[in-house]
Length: 118
Image (cartoon, rainbow, N blue to C red):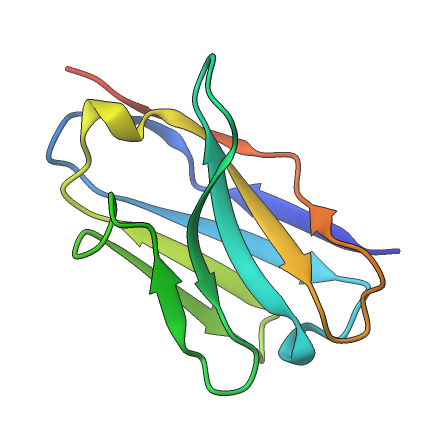
């Protein structure tokens, strides 16, 4: 079965960095679009970044451009989100999503909490 397991969240001070990981299994990772979303309390879930399967092209939300970097390691079936210069407004639960390729529906991980606070 498809599984997406996020890790790497935690508490960090403003200006700090975190790297999130999402380990995938149960589907052909190399052919899937992988994305990171986040949801803050009282807000809708929003797309943070995505990376295409073959060319590895990345797209980012305007709010994180220049601070976050999405990458993927197809040999490890893992997608990463490097988050630098974190701000309190980045506080949210971050979710990994897989879609496309041999997947018939979108799949989500369980989420990992990121809290940016002094």
